[in-house]
Every structure is written in structure tokens, then in C-alpha cells.
Length: 383
Image (cartoon, rainbow, N blue to C red; front, side, top):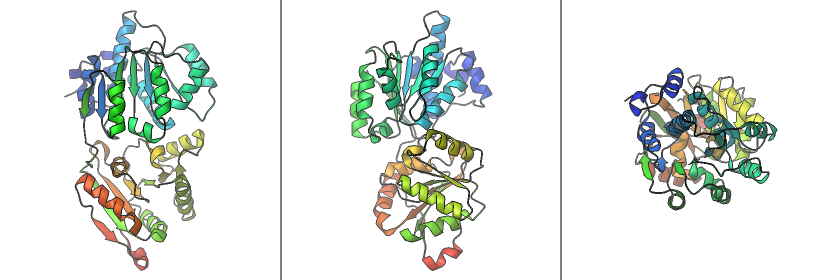
């Protein structure tokens, strides 16, 4: 199936074609007709499945058609709420790409930067607003934003939103939305608290689920290294000395851990930068830009910061620390092996992390091949 068969209008088809897309992903193929049909929707799809386009394309189409029919004043009619600045920027870029021929205006508001350019954009009038919860509430309290005319509400990365402690903020925002609206909720996982939120937020929703959270992409080659915690740094440096690792996204559990690993790699003359919530917005954007342009070979990240990272042709994901939540492993390694390409996921597991590994293998119903690393054997490690 191609996008034409989804009844997408010409201005958006032209933009999609220019961007190099011809065939919708499974979540797009299922979700777009439902959203165009006015249905509330729960989308359960992991990172890399194309869910941003799954809601951006139909919303742009509906708003463009309303605009052509003279029904659409320049006020906020669609609100997309997302947990991180990086993800908000990425979603904003998608609306810009797909909507370039529609005449619709969008803007993105997030914290960590001056609000002045954001308020100026709002004053000029926007149709679509992409926002993180904190800055959105701040601008609402300052009377820069009124959500009273919102027709479409998208809650993106709902599970991460709650993980980051935004539950109260989300409820405050929802309370300011019109009761009559179309609501779309997207989440990589569906824990009980998300199901409960969906029950209160959506009206007779249709559920779209692709690539279940327990699955891992077949094209990703997975390996676990059993290694003492004190030897993880040496193992990482040894692996990265292999030029076959073109680019690597390294995950740590903590922000301080990300900084420490980046410093250790830099000392070993391996270009690396860290990205996490304590970095300034400018530093985070610069690190991500350098990584995408391959000016930096290694990006060291925490899970929350990595939610907005979308890098094509990423060769390796390395779990320096094993994740505490099994589903997080699936999301981490899903950064590689995208669009049918191959990828490699390497995990460092010390003796205290073997319980996490068991939980991961139970979730994915797969035993991951392992390599036992002895300190005196680090000089013979191969990928």
C-alpha cells in the first residue's frame, strides 16, 4: 500500500514524496484512516515505528480542509503534548516537513530557553502547538496560551510522561481543554496507569498496536558481555577502538554516569559527548547535531534524554548499564536496526545486574548470546 490509497490530499502527498516516503508504516496505515474518520485512538507503538507521521499527516489534512472551507481561524486547534524538548523539536520538524504546502502554521514551546521567541510566534497566530508540560502551563498562566478552541489533543509518549512525574501537569492541562475534541494517545508501553488515564481521557477509542513492546527487531544482532563493573570502562574503550563501530549510542543509568563515560572516552581519544536533562538546551541540541552529522562518533545518553533522538543508520547501541525496566531494553536497542537496516546491540552486565538480564530475556522470549569477559582477556575482545 502507498500513501495515495490512504486518501491523503495532494499538498501533503507532495511533501511526503519530497521527504522520500512512499509506503506507510504499519502504524500509519492503521491509524491515519481512523483519525481522518474522527475516532479517538490509542496507539501502542515503540520508537521508530513512524507514529509521529501517523498523527501529524491526518491532523494536517483535516485542518487544511477546514481552512479551505473557511472554517479555520488562526487559533490553536491542535495541541501535541510530549515529555521532552528533543521530542518536541522533532515533532515540530515533522509538522513542518509534512505541512509545508498546506499554509498551516505551527510552533513549538519548551523550557530551558527564553520564552520571548515562543510568545512572539504565538502572538502571530498558530494552528498547531507542540509543547512540553512545564513551559505550556507557564505560558498558560501568563495568558499567552488559550486552549479553549482545541479540536485535537495528542498525548505523545504517555508512559514516559508519567515516568518523568508530569501526571499532575497533564491533568491541569487536560482540565483546560474543551470536552468536545478528538483525542489521540500514543505510548510505547501500556502499564495500568496509562490504561486508567486512557479511560478518563478518550471516548470509545480504537486501539492500534504494532510491534509489541516485548518484541525486538530481528535485524538487530544482540550480545551480552558478562563483565565486572570496574572493567566496563576498559571494555567499552576496547570495543570502540574497532573502526567497524561506525556510530554508537551508549546508555547509562544516571546523568553523572553519562558525563563520566563521555570524559573517559575523550581521554582515550574517542570523540564522544553526553546528553541528559542537566545539560542546557543549547548543549543538548549541539551534541545531537554533531552526532547526526557524524562529527561525534559516540553519544552517551540517559533514557529520558534519548526519547527524542532519531538517528538514521545508527550502527550500534551499547548498554553500559543494564536498564531496570525490561521494556526499556527494547526501546534502547530499537534505536538501531531501523527501516529494515541491520544493527548491533551490546550490553554490559555485571554480577549485580543479572536479575535485570533475566527479566529482559523473559520479556522478549529470547536468550541473548553472551561472552564472558575476564580482566586479563580484555585485550583480545572482538565485536
